[in-house]
Image 1 (spheres, rainbow, N blue to C red):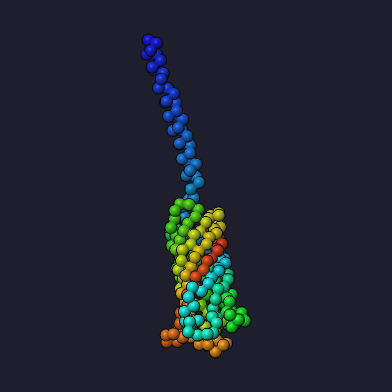
Image 2: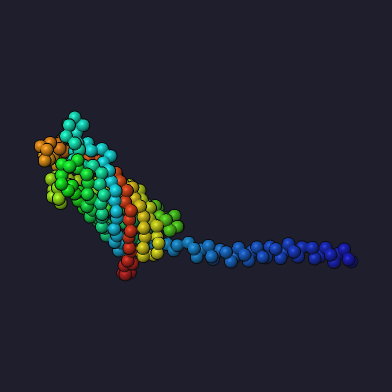
Length: 222
């Protein structure tokens, strides 16, 4: 009888441990779900600012290799403003205006490039506060001395970025970009003909980095 009595109580500690582990897992599951950001169930008006640093990956027709004249378009720093619409899904569409101050080998007193672009982003939602995306766009560009337009043309944009949600209304991020440009031919202050390779147009290629701060304002549901 004594042996039977002892054997009947041997499984009790294992049962208690199993119940304790089960209760702990049940308590941790809602906590883990609470830390996961909710899905994007709203549409937003997005406004923001961006600081950009860019350099010339290839001056191409803006600074021909066979000419002795210094390059008129080199690295620069800029500021951009943007506004757009963020869908409930993975897409953002908007517009951006950017101006940047560039080095010009002293051929221009104040070399300013201005860009006006339409932009689109495709977000890859990982269920975390940090969301990578791919951005692309197209727009108009002008370049000249002291906010003038010595030349102008069309600019494209392509590159990856990442956005970190500080709060549901505020995000910060960074983006790399490649911007090819097709510019109209012109003659600079040193009487050098530039961007004149094909039918009065030429190309140049910029790459750079943007640091971005954006605000999201929920739009009312229809």
